[in-house]
Image (cartoon, rainbow, N blue to C red; front, side, top):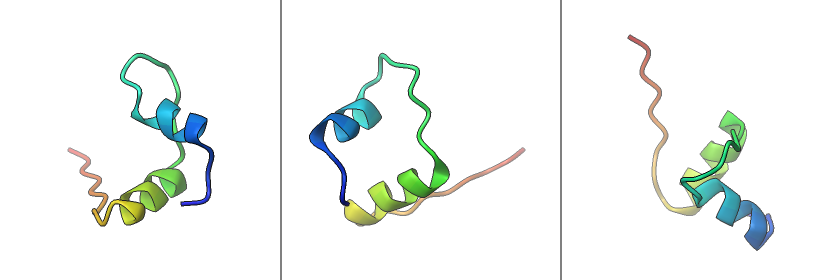
Length: 41
């Protein structure tokens, strides 16, 4: 994932109001070998 350490820290922080885009979350999941699942109820 081509991003800075500060952007990763912001994404992983639990105490902020940062709302990453779905595209960013997909790239992050791919870098971690995970999947994104979106469920609407």
